[in-house]
Length: 269
Image 1 (spheres, helix red, strand yellow):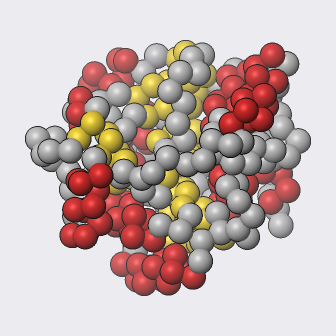
Image 2 (spheres, helix red, strand yellow):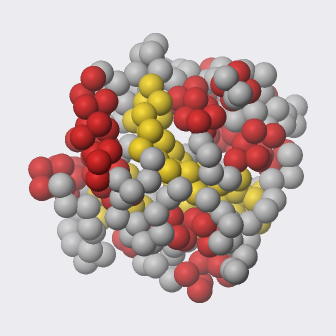
């Protein structure tokens, strides 16, 4: 048995009122060379169109496809992810946004790269507005590295042998993005998940990473592996960013390892 064959990856997909993009994301998740143990949709208060989509796609899935919804009280990605992660049965969590298209080997790569005492920060390929609109219309999820409308094109290269050599433990906060991240479930619970004091866009993923690193669970960057493509979308409102920056700085300055307003409220319910 290989080192990581006992790892069961629960894929958590965060979404809010963009079912046409979520459909492509789910379809790419259902086409994995190594399927996830389950797919959990972390829904931050979408209307019924998202529920209808998930119901329609469920018969196509050979793994559980679970919809975890919370009331729409504004941008609450931290709470949405906590609710979804609390429902997971796998021992390893992979999180993406609901407008990400996954390479066929995405889950395989996250599982093979998982290492105790660390979490993974993956990269992404940015799709242009024109490329994204084409995919939303045609529902094509496969991406060629040679096609037009790709930003960060080097991130389309899959070189697993090189990826493993480059994935060195570090404490950097640069480029933390929860649209392609993975970690052991037990480590997430150890720091009490995402901090729900964060509302509005920004920094909840960085603060999560800070508490992980303060606890000794270090970051590993995965390049040339775990490839994902991000559909174009307008920027979210930054009006809460100053307050979120303050919460992040507190976690850094005070070496915080545990948040009070976290995942524990949803566990064992």
